[in-house]
View 1 (cartoon, rainbow, N blue to C red):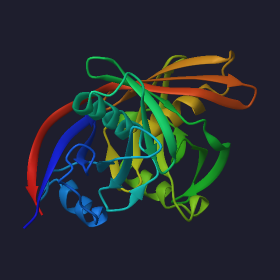
View 2: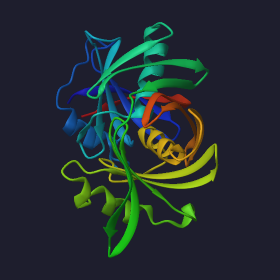
View 3: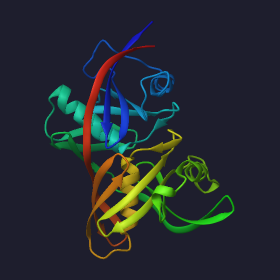
View 4: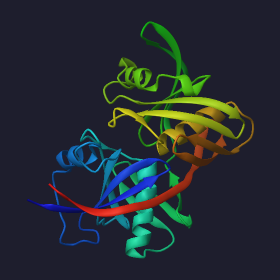
Length: 273
């Protein structure tokens, strides 16, 4: 039997099992994280989480973060996971104010702005496709697509609390329009020019999560596209808390994107594999 040390962390409702894979714990090094993640993310027989963050040493940044979804698949990036990794590094490694994290989607920077609050600079979004129709169970739905590190589809709704996110989200996630990789699905209700409510169906988790960092960024950007001005600040109200998204718009270009919100360490422990 092997014993794996872990830290449970939460970023605005997104919960993660964080594994120090040789970053600080030099004696702890595992390999098959696809298999490990499926076991420890299970909320009945494991620790329970939306995903697993594997933190390792990096030659290009302060640390390397790999993200494994609850189904064992490896994701390119995760906004709330990134914020958890930065807090972990700050708490356990005493790193400087600005922390660089290597991911499959590139290198990101962030810092701890206050107690249990982390702000990260996200990559500039790409592959923007606003306002096109998709067929979902015989019904035409207006979709908006954007990649904020991972692919996201944004659908505007009224009566967000009554939306069947599990059913609609699963169909959008696997829709032919987004093959082969699929897409996360975000359902957004606009409250005013600075506040939106959001519910997200996450690819890899294959269900609704309390929050999604890259989904909050995607939804904030899509919600603000038709607004006037060049600088925007949006409060994204998720079921797990409020995330703040800030960015600048120059013509059709979106740049200087930041994501900020609550992040905290919940408990540490050891699991037998």
